Image 1: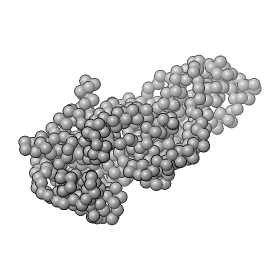
Image 2 (image 1 turned 30 degrees about the vertical axis):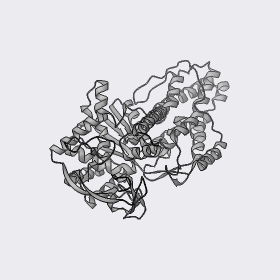
Image 3 (image 1 turned 30 degrees about the horizontal axis):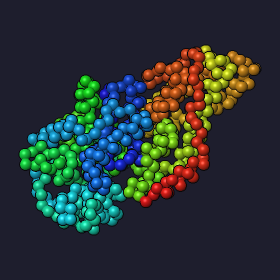
Image 4 (image 1 turned 120 degrees about the vertical axis):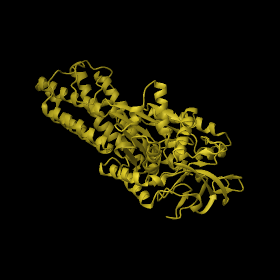
Amino acid sequence: MSIFIGGAWAYANGSLHLGHISSLLPGDILARYYRLKGEQVLYVSGSDCNGTPITIRARQEGVAPHIITDRYHQEFLECFSKLGFSYDCYTRTDTEHHHKLVQEIFLELLEKGHIYRKEIEQTYCEECAQFLPERYVEGICPVCKEPSRGDQCDHCSTILEPLELLNSKCKICGNPPTTRFTEHFYFALSSFQAQLENYVQKAENNKLWRENAVSLTKRYLKEGLQDRAVSRDLPIGVSVPVAGYEEKKIYVWIEAVSGYYTASKLWAKEADKDDSSFWNVSAKSNYIHGKDNIPFHSIIWPGILAGLGKEPLPTHIVSNEYLTLEKKKLSTSRNWAVWVPDILERYEPDSIRYFLTINAPESRDADFSWKEFIYSHNSELLGAYGNLVNRTLKFIMKAFDGVIPDKVVSSVLQDKVVTLYKDTCRLIEEASFKQGLEKVFELVRFSNKYFDEQQPWKQIYENVESCKQTLADCVYLIANLAHILTPFLPFSSQKVKDFLHISETNWKPFLVKPIVLSNVEPLFKRIDPARIEKELETLNKQTV
């Protein structure tokens, strides 16, 4: 089966924080899992280099937009690499390749009658002498009365137009905007209402989407889909490929989601491969993002694909709720965030991946606290999993010169492992990553209990064959645990595989050969709990 996985594109206007990683990590877990299953996987994403946030940041720093995008795109590449994200293609939206294909998509929709011209009244700043795109306008949401941007309210998820905001002001200079008439292109999204209603109903019936995606999308559909502008007066972006309109840019909401398709084509071009199997009815497509991006993946992108006549529409939508920080909402403007480059300087990537999975906001908001992060590392990764690996292998090194005992593993233990493969397989494919990881650690705890009950430190003197059996059993459990944990914890899993000389690449139980262990070292290091107060102090000091 062909598995397409698209991770949401982060704006290249500032560093990644843990909220970004929390929403994107499921994509890498899926990609690694399906590769182990032997499926054909294409996992893509990139840096959004054309959005309004980039021009705002560039204005603030007094530099050209490409200076900002180059800086953060490189930083994103480094962070994702250090965290083990296994993208097949990670690109950016300011490439000639992307621009060309987005223009082709625009023209095809125009030719098919799904895009049309319309004169509209648009916000305009007299002080800045320019039309204001949605994110350049801030004010009060007319629905929930909370502070909002001109495109969408983060508090109640209402999709907005700048003219609807109360007490609106220009984000650049702070003055109230006026309005002027201008002509733009619109996407006839409303014409896909019935088709998208059937599409969403099918996804709900087959439980292919997270509940938040279903409920929010059905809300939009109930309110009735509105045609949306697909061009804007912007300084950077993909130029509208129509004579007389070249100064206008294709709006980021249609341009950025099209990046999944353009990245697929870029991968095919650079790898000299055919990507057509990822865009037909037999493919399974997974779109990974946070709650604020749901309508762009559940309505906008399916609408574009439907307009192009491409199949399939997104089959699986994996949309996390929000990650809070120390019980408070993340705020980049106030610097209330844990920045990814910073945390990677001090902590292991698997510690971050473990915590963000076991505490994932899959169905409701979840919190990142330094206390829980450090305690979970010390108690679960080090105290349970690391301890099982370390004491088993060290015992073999000491008592048997590192030679793994050659014994037939009991059928009871083999059945447990077979069951775990099946359970984890089902839960990962259902996008229940948290529950899947919990299942794995149930077997970790069972394995530690088994080691304690068998007491190999006594068996070695009382019945050496029983001791060998215990250790062979534990090595079997450890090897398969490491293999099942590969999608979740790739770095520590590879360490265990190196210790045991394992080269298994398929998603199935396997027996360990009685080889000689080599280069055994502790899987994890203890984190001093004193770091909790230090991290909290740093967090509070950095807050604006």
